[in-house]
Every structure is written in structure tokens, then in C-alpha cells.
Length: 400
Image (cartoon, helix red, strand yellow):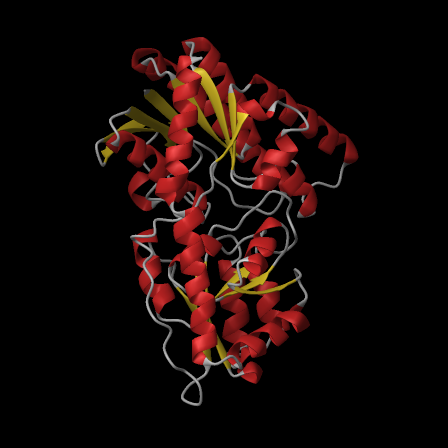
């Protein structure tokens, strides 16, 4: 197959989107498919174009034998909806410049990452122009996620976005969902024959398991959050509401995003809460970081229907118990698989109780939670398993 990926993010950017698309493109290329990536100047999660790319506009580069075409955009990670819309519009317009290269490449499939929703419209237009199959990959449900996070309050705007969303689903030859909730949502609009589940998952070779070290009576319980510091997580609010010293716990935060500066300022003025802020690390370094801690914290500002935090897969794979402040499908899996404890978003009292609860488990009980996670990751969420399902479905699109 010849596959063109249209994505808002790609390495050297960090985050679940860049990691997911990079793995998918690289794995398909290694299986013998022709792959090219069409994306933008690296800007995520800081909202600032990386220094080495700042004087460039449109250009190409090669990573791991994959041709990558980069286009300009208006970069922003502002929490204000108007700036995000401007940023998304700049992507949607800029990527149309890919037409000339796509016409030469002649892809069988144009694989479009959404959100942002507007990029999906550009992908649909380009797919029609070059007579390729239009495949829409949904990691979150927009505008539903914006509503759940309180980013959209206008019923009129929400209705327009919902109609746009459904239009795109109907135009797609195939819709890929990152969670079962997304597939359920899709089936209200399109046939289940046009959908497939393709979870972010994790590379269980890269994210290998190590034993949990004995901390009891020797040192504080060590908890780690490694992820984005943005509107959907609201890590700052967590830090304001919990004193980890009082829980005999250290919280170590690794990440970057729109809220990092605010978090730095808050911790500078509140240094005695048992919270330590570190620089973000590359994806390949994350396993080494997670291995140093007793449990992994996953935070959601609100229960967002369809969203499945990718850090859960990584925590499972390295064999660490999970403490989630969230809900939905991910919370159900954590509880059903017996890999950790869940509290509702912003229920900091319940989260504190869960931290103490997991501390009071014996080392063997904590290890059992980690072992359950590793087994679940290997059985259901290894990226190789996920890729086989996707590749089969893409072949079906070509032959139909």
C-alpha cells in the first residue's frame, strides 16, 4: 500500500499523537508499505516552534527512511478557544499545499489524524483530489471533548461543530477509534463496517517490566506523573489541593505544556508540599523514569467521553500500579483488570485515600497489581497486536 499520513504532530514533538502516528507510520513502512508524512513545524506541547525549525517555512526531511513534509502554521496552546480555532484554521489551510506532492506520490490511502477536526476537512478534500481512500483516525471526540472540558459553552457553536463532525464521519471510507466509547459514538452516525478499534497501546519491548522496590519504613512513597501539563490535565489544581508531604509521599512531575510556567511559579512559592517538577523527557526515556517509582499517577480534569489516557498503557507495561483521577472507559479497565485505584476527577480527598491505600499494601500486593498490568498490556494493548488489526482493515479498503 501507499499511505500518506496527515497529522498535526510528529517527532521531534512529544505527546501521544506524535508517538502514535510515528509508530504507525514507521511500523507500516517496515512491513514494506510506501509511507510519507505531511505535518507541520514542530511546536507541541509548548506552542513555540522549535529553535532549529524557526527560519523554515515549507521543507522536507527524512526520519528513519520516511519522507516528512512540513508546513507552516500559527502555533498556540492557549486555553482560549479563539486562539485554538485560529491555530486549527492555519493548519487546515496550510496542509492544502501538500496537494502537489500527493499528486506525485499517488497514495492509496490518506490517513488523517483528528483532532483537530478542521484538518479532517482538508484531508477529505485532498483525498478526493488525488482519488485516495479517506481514513479518519479519531483519538478524541470533538466537539464532545471540548464540551466536557468546558471549552465550548455556546449551544449554537456546539451544534455547528457536531454537524461538521457527522459530515466528516459520513465522508470517510474508514473511521478509526482509539477507544470503545469512540466506536459507540461513531455507530450512531455510520455503519460499524466502516469502523475499527486501534488503540494507542504501547511498545511492550521498549516499556519492559522491572520489580517494584521495597520502600516501606525506608523512604516516602514515590509517585510519578509523566505527561502533558495542559487544559485536559489541570495538574496545577491537583498541586494546590494536595500536600503530598502529609501523605508521606513524593510526587515527581515530568512534562511540558501550557501550564508549566504557572506550575513552576506555584511550586517556587510552595516548596514544602512534596512535589518535584522535572523537565520533559523523550519517549524512549520514559520507561527508565517510570521504573524509578512505586506507582504512576494519571490525571484528568474531567471525565471526557471517548478519551483514553495513553499513559495508562505505559504504566501497565512497566508493571507499576496506577492511581487515576478520572473516569470513563479507562477507569473501568483499571478496576476490571485490578491494576490500581480510581477516584473521580477533582475528588482530591478520594485520591488522597487511594494514595494511602496503595501505600499500606504489602510489597507483594503492590507487585501483584503491577503484574496484572503487565499481563493486560501484553494480552490486549501491545502495539503489534493493534497494528495487525489496523493493517488488515486498510488492506480491505484497498481491495473494496
